[in-house]
Amino acid sequence: MLSLRPSPQRRLLGVAALAFGTFVGAGAARARAQAEAPSKPRYQDRKDSTIRASTKAVAEAAAWLSGEDPWHGTYDDTKRAFDVLAEALHDDASAIRRVAAGAIGRVGQANELPASVIDTLTKMMADSAPGVQQAAALAIGRVGRRRDLPQATVDALVHAMARNPSELRGAAATALGSIGGSFEISPSVIDALEHALADVDWTVRSWAIKALGTIGRVRELLQATLRLLVGGLGDAYWQVRVEAAKALGVVRKGPELPPSLLEALVRALRDGVSRVRFWAAVAMEQLGSATPASIDALAAALEDVDWQVRAAAARALGASGGAPEAAIEALARVATRDPDPSAGVAAAEALAGMPRLAPETIGAWAEGLEDGETRVRARTAVLLGEVAAGHDVSEAFAALARAVEGGVWEVRAAAAAALGRTRRHEVPQSAFASLALGLRASRGEIRSMAARAIGEIGSGHEVPRAIVEALVEALSDRYGGTRAAAGVAIGQIGRRQAIPQGAVFALAWALADTRGRFCNPFARALGRVVGSNELPPAAVGALMDALMDTSGGTRAVAAAAIGDVGERQDLPPMAMDM
Image 1 (cartoon, rainbow, N blue to C red):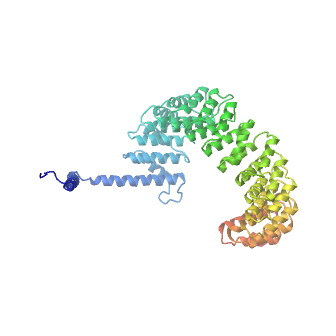
Image 2: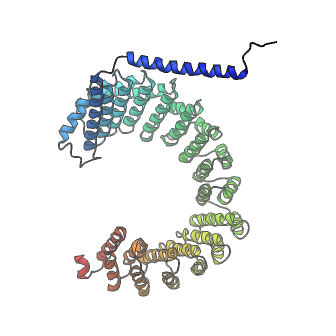
Image 3: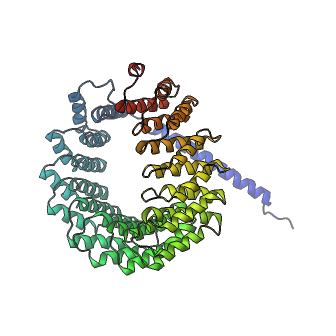
């Protein structure tokens, strides 16, 4: 039987033809519509070009007045530049009024504005264009940082807090915070900001909390206001919760904290958003007060998946004034085993700030320096260095000194650097002997770290003559980093104690033998050692030769060093002429 149904190929060709016809038809329709549409009037093109030119003029005037472009050739008169901005505030185009308001805000931070300009900005908050309203409010806030504003202007900002759009309310809240952070404000300002904490727009709530935090930095807030800020930690939007945690960390709380404050921050440490947890820990650090519940929450936060939260929790524990043994053990784990070095350093610094550490705890850390994974041992050296800097513990010194003498180079370098941080306490001679061995290590990194450690110690303690002579030998090291570190170290030591004359000659020789920025450490060191030593003519001559170096940085360092020398001893006439 003969089928009248078209084949699949014919059906496909038919669909393609229909689609092509539709496409062509649509294109023809668009072409007819464009041809029938009225052409753009020429005056519109002229208006667009006028707006661009006016906007450019406003930007140039603002740059002139704010000092951002003091050599601009367009304006040679400050009054003329002010007139341009003032006229632009009344322009017919809203784009120009908006740009002019922003420019006035920038200029008002560095210049005294006429009262008429402030009045104009106040009226512009009722402008028909929302963008102009927002720009005017923000400009008033910037101006209000440096001068007391009329009460009518502040009242206009308070009134704007109850108007639409939400961008205006947010800008008004920002402006009120800026003004309240610099000048005395009326209770109506606080009332308006408190009312904004219940705004339907989360951005307005966020700006209101930020404004209250700015005001709370300089004046004590009422307990009712603090409770509203605490309530912000439970907002549905994490951005608002972040701002609430920031504000609670910086505002003045009075003699007693509201009981709900720490409880809310403890809950915020378990928030699902890491930024909220981070700022909650920062706020607890800034508060400096702790309860058993908050200590436990911070110790738990040391296991957070975000390293920034772990670091903030460690700093908060360090600021708590003491922690139980379990928290100290958790800090030690972070200090020695955390995958992120920044969190480990924060934990080590927190432990160093603890008022008391059990001797057996420090002994356990010292034992860990001699056994285990290389990375853990190196981090343990950092921990012991921080602890030894804050506590006068001989066991830590001894462990670090042993670690410098031999073993894996990463651990030796870390131990040498850790010894350098102990300059606040008396350093045993065994540590100097170990660092002298470090100066003769096979790896340049160890030699460099040992030289830096000696310099750090020498900035606060007497360094034996033999160690200074070892540093002089290091000035001839084949590794450039070691030579530079040795020069810096000799300068640090020579600032507070007399050094052998041979060390001064060695610095001068190293300066003369080096060119470019690589000779900067030696020139700087010669300027430092003159504090306790007299420079021979050869050393002054080396500094004078460095004034002819091709590197501008080197010439500047040499000039500064010659100036230091000239303050303490007579210079040759040639140096004075240069």
